[in-house]
Image 1: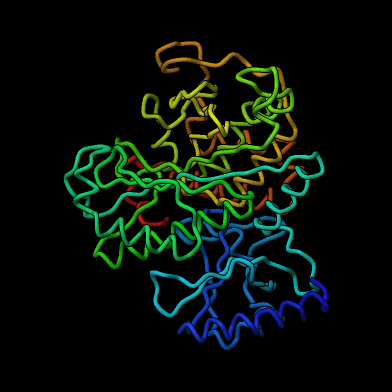
Image 2: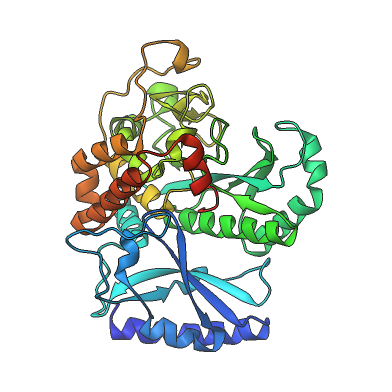
Length: 430
């Protein structure tokens, strides 16, 4: 970010700070998401927002090698006490938080002290991949489905109206808070596990969709606390039970419709989906990045445990959704993932393409006996990620190395832990 851009940023920030102050906002949370999927933060007084917009806010690059339990690993490029980065708030996403009185939020981009983009900034990686897609003429749209469990859970049945009645005030306040923050909610409904709910948000540009899912998650957390509840987005709340997913939907005009391929796909659309399937084991290191993720990825639980696709098949890892707005849903991802890494990596492997697209699968892949399981552990997914030339090139040496180091450290940390110990240790990390 050069001096002229920083000065323009400061002018806008002064105007925004005046607006926030008039609304009673006293603090602004500047967040980024680390490679373990944990949302980290620095906060500034509203009166200091212009300074933050011009000079950034200091933070250590060591956070790129934090694990989910706040241990620190290292790579040849990152780790240790040395160095400093600058966090710059994205003022276009500056949002007054409806469930946290007196607070606003903005996602942050990370730069080096000389103004160059930090090579491990996940949000800027996602932006680069969006630009790469645009060069190919693709205007991609993405949206997330976020699942969470509230504690105490209540007694209502799976998908039951009883759960909405039990938590009607809670869900009303959630709708109100998300709406006040400009989040376009498609639906909220009870899910399978006791106390489990899901919120689906409208498709947006990929970076905007990643911003949205961060804001949705922290809004759910804040509204839950106001109602005496605690929200968990962990992949496995309880070992042996259905866990929380965070499914990604991908669409683009003229990619998955208007063609003469499978279900109306264009050749480019088929190649895009084939690219996702080809790299899906490596993508799991991005989208299912915790040892707890593999407690969730069990067959016959609608988690997407098999490397296949199908029309409206909720057991396939890649579900094709037909209709007026056809899209592809990746069901094997969860909320331990950094959403900026998710959207960027999905774009990268989709653009790399592959082919041909295999035949779609009907029914439960677990009962067929001819379908490939996705990696059974984080270590196996990390192996596939390390071997993926597509993802290594897209992420770059510094970011790819940081992600891999965190995955290896997490896998080693829990290598001798039981499923119950893994679930207990990660239950409240996300």
